[in-house]
Image 1 (tube, rainbow, N blue to C red):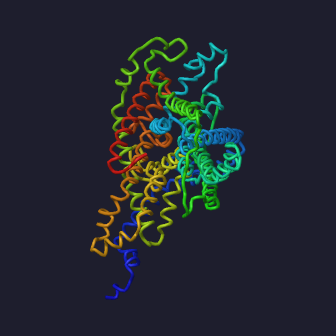
Image 2: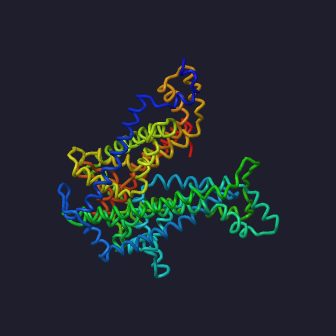
Image 3: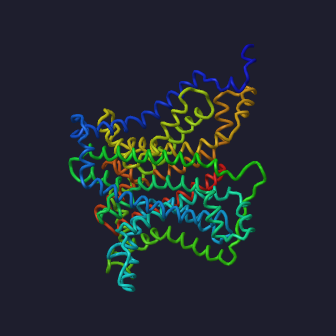
Length: 570
C-alpha cells in the first residue's frame, strides 16, 4: 500500500535491477569501443620505437620530432588553407541554396533535393576520381577543351581546385543544416524593413544575416571540423601535387615503408584529436548563443517566401547547374569507363566494354561485395541497437551515470576516420584477441565512429514523446519491456530507420577507416578501389567506380522507398 502513495512518474523512473544490469552492459560496451583505442594510441605516441606488439621507452621524442621537423608546419599550413577555404566556400554555396529554397519562390527546388541525395549516395573517392577525369593534368576531358580553346586549363591536382571540389562536396550538408533555420525564421522583421524603404540587399545584410548568425557560425565551425577530417579529396587529388594534410600524412606515415612508424602516426593522431576537440567546444559555445536571437515565440508566427519575380527562373537555372556539378564527376567516370585508354589520345570517339569485362574477372570482386554488404548491414544494425538502448537510459531513466554515457558515445565525433582506424589498428595488434585480420575490427571501428550521429537521430524523437504515455501504459499493467517494444519503438521508428540508413550508407562508402585496418583477407569495395588507384589501372578503376556508384544509388533508392512505409522522409 505504501507504494500507492508515490506518484506514478516517480515510481516508473526508479531504476530496477534488470534496468541497471542492461545499463551497465551498454555502458561497458560503449567504453570498450571508445577508450582502449584512444588510450593505446596515446600510449604509443609516448613510447617512440614501439612496434605493433612491443613497447619503447617513455618519452616525447615523437612529438618533438613532429614539431621540430619542417614537414609538420608545412602540413599544418596546407591543412589550414584547405579546411578554411573549403569551409567558407561551402558555407556560401550551401547557405545561398538554403536561403533560396526556404525563403524564396525560386524555380527548381526539387532539383536541389535530388542533387543533395545523389551527393550523399556517391562515395567521396568516386567524386575525387571523377574530377580527375574532368580536370586531370594533361588527360582530363575539360582540360583538353580548355587547352585547345584558351591555351590554359585549371588542374584538379592543385590547392585551389581541391578547395573548390571539396566545397562542392560539403555544400549539401550545409544546405540541410541551414534550410530548417531559414524556414523557421519569422519574416515580420524583414517585411517591416522593406515597408520602411530598405532594399532587399540591405534587409539581407542588416536583418536576415544577424538573426541567422548563431546558426551560421555553428554550421561554419562544424564544417571546418569536418574539413580537417577530410581524407578522400586530399589523398586522391593532393598527393600527386605534394599537397599534404593531417589525415593524409597519418595514412602515408604507415604506408610509406615496410616498417610503419606507429609512434609518429599516433602523435599526429593525438594532436589532431586535440585540435578538433577545441573546434567542437567552439561549436557548442556557438549553439548556446541561439537563445539571444529567438524570433519564433508563442505569438503568431508565419514564414513567408519572397517573390523573386523573373529572377526565380534565373535561380532555377542556378539550381540546375548545382545539380549538374554534383553529378558531373559520376558522369565523367561513367563516360571514361567505356574508353579503351585514359589520356590525351586514348578515349574520345572510341567505345569498349573491356574495362567492365576486366572488372568482372577481378579477383576478389565477390569477396569485396559480400564483405561490404556484411560490414554495412551489421555495423548499422549494431550501432542503432546500441544507441537505442543508450538513448532510452539517457532520456527515460534516472540511473546515475547516464549523462556520462552520452558523453562517451559522443566523444568519437572529434576523431577523424583515419585516426580512429589507426587507434583500432594499434589496439588489436596489441590486445590478445583474434580480431585483427577479420571483419569485426572494421565493424567495431564503424560502430564507434557513427554512434555519435546515430544517437542524434534517435534522441530528439524520444525526447518529444511525453512520459505520460509510459505512465498510462504501466498503470494499465504493461511491463517495462512491453512499453518499450509496443509503444516507444513504433513511435520513434522513423528516427531508427533514418539512423540505420545513415550508418549503412556511410559504412558502405567509407574508405578512411577501412584503409587503416583492412588486410588481404578482408577486402571491401572501397579498399579495392583504393588499390586500383594506387596501381594506376585507370580504365578498370572508372568501370569499378561506376558499378559501385550505380549500386549505391539503387540501394539508396530502394532503402528510402521502403523507409517511407515506416514514416521516414527526407
